[in-house]
View 1 (cartoon, rainbow, N blue to C red):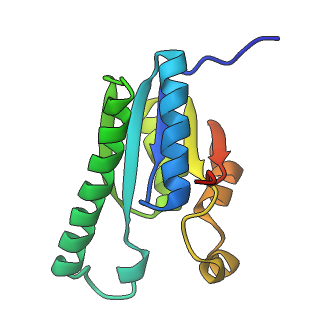
View 2: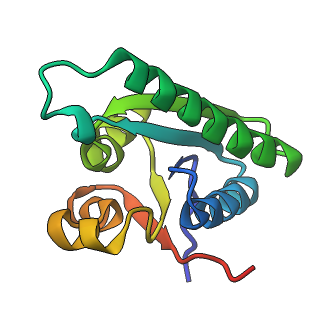
Length: 149
């Protein structure tokens, strides 16, 4: 049996419990493969796309939240001994950024993400980000179920 080795692992986080489980799994994979880990948070612009221009205060608040989410994930990765870790905060549509744009730009060979990050009603109407990434990404994708704590 041939085992896949990964060199550049992307984990997407929105700060949810499912994303935390994905971070733990991505860190373990990066350690095992001596891979570079990219931790991504996307500031979702969908809520403000109906307005003519994004509200500056809203975007500043979302940036602060993103900074906090990334800092916590970076602290965890470093506490586990990873040193080759890059943080990314992007603004746009998570489905596009996670499925294609960031993996192509950063030459990612594995995308790791939680199974759930948004509410059931939104998933019903627009589909989950993880479902979209699995469907449209040309990269390997690992969907992590929330760990029972």
